[in-house]
Image 1 (cartoon, helix red, strand yellow):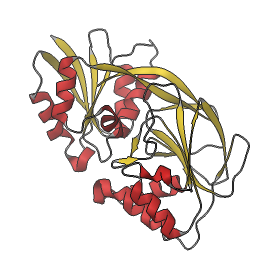
Image 2 (cartoon, rainbow, N blue to C red; image 1 turned 135 degrees about the vertical axis):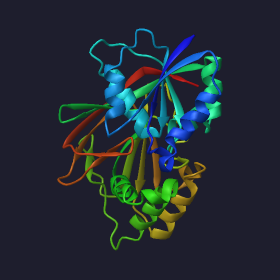
Image 3 (tube, one colour; image 1 turned 180 degrees about the vertical axis):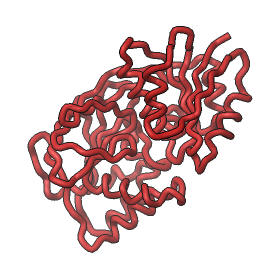
Image 4 (cartoon, one colour; image 1 turned 30 degrees about the vertical axis):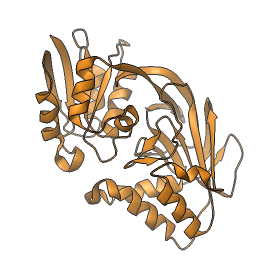
Length: 292
């Protein structure tokens, strides 16, 4: 009998987390599940950081990428250093990690878990003025942070909120430049930047379509300022990765980077807005194992 800790975010997927957990568990045999329902922000991290893992085979995250972010941060900061494979059960509005792993339903997650499919997942170690946070999706700045802030106010629209937020950002009377120096250099022509572990972000967007989960590198995307119609074309094509053909888009692979954020500017880490002035980022190769 294999033992699971199943962390359920009941607010995920328009409050469908509990029903998605039931679907997932109904497709498992030969497992004993210890189901934990989160009660407040940060609770999934607490569970992953403090639960005894001596008899646990796998930790399952029933939620979105925010729930996975919390669990990974809990595991990577455990006092005893214990880690267990993570199974991402897609129940959020984005589900970037599950999409990168090639599935989008709780039934498929159960099938992968039953087969015992495992692979390594890198994490970006983000030092925010001495505070350490781990990212398994992306960290972004500039217009990305503004779009994320708008999207938080549009949660009733589900996964489409990111597209709506991007449209609202494009409609601003003046499109601002990048709110940070990257490795000591300020480029006034850059509208936004994103350093990604996963290919996907938001609701099916492929910001960095060639990113690999376990290559030890960040895929750094920058989008330069341009006309609103040209930027709208980039937005439309980001869902199939065709935006790489735009003259405004640049991608490079990095082992790390340093950001110096302007006063009042914010950083997005796995969908969460965070504050910092000097941000140092490097990759922890194979930080955790994931099902898939």
